[in-house]
Image 1 (cartoon, rainbow, N blue to C red):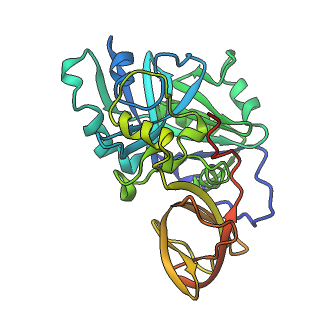
Image 2 (image 1 turned 90 degrees about the horizontal axis):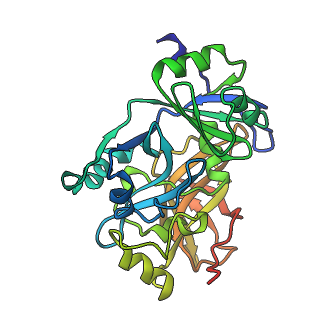
Image 3 (image 1 turned 180 degrees about the vertical axis):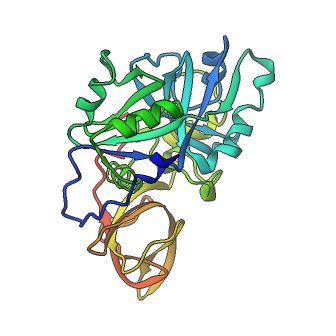
Length: 322
């Protein structure tokens, strides 16, 4: 439909403010939905977050792991259309769907990939816009055709039916941009993200899931719990998700490799999970790196050897409070 073609990249320099109100189709994002009498108990036994205590007006991060604690998916979980939605990159859904459904035959639960449209609403007027769609309060609200979910003070997610998405976009006065702005704000927030290329490589703590309250260490058993608990109580985790920034004279490909300086040599450090390149050739990215690197470690993109990169501060602490 024509409304899909109304979105364009936003040309932002590194010091520019974002629009007061922007809307973007999140084409590389999707959701797995879960309904049925056993949805809560089934999901509780599969994922790191506490599904039982999740209030209808709240959302939470979570991870789904294999038996060894390696992550199939990092998602945002919320109540949606009488069930649950697990919002995550579309690229990981095929494998994740097969894994999360593996034992569903023994429970009264229906699990499938949603065909709904994900829209990102951004800017200082984002909440005002959502208020116009729903009379309810809270960080998760039913709206016409689906659900609105608060991400932070200037962002909301809308997961809605295609006709509702078209209606929202065509009647809105918001700037219509592509999803790269959403990616930029995810990176700045240091939000956990997993791509298909790095599925089944990391434990949840390497993606900072614990730092955004996506792991419950007091809930009952779930797949991979032993490894996740050992990482906390025995300190076995040696990696973390970091924000890095630097120069990029050309576009950064997906899964680009970052190198770190070791003396006069360069050694592979990790592959980018997400990146954003500003119009002034500055860039910012998320990458999993060893968590014992010095703050002044020199970094560069392997394919742009003249680039100079460094760590940027995370907006949360990686220190274990317990």
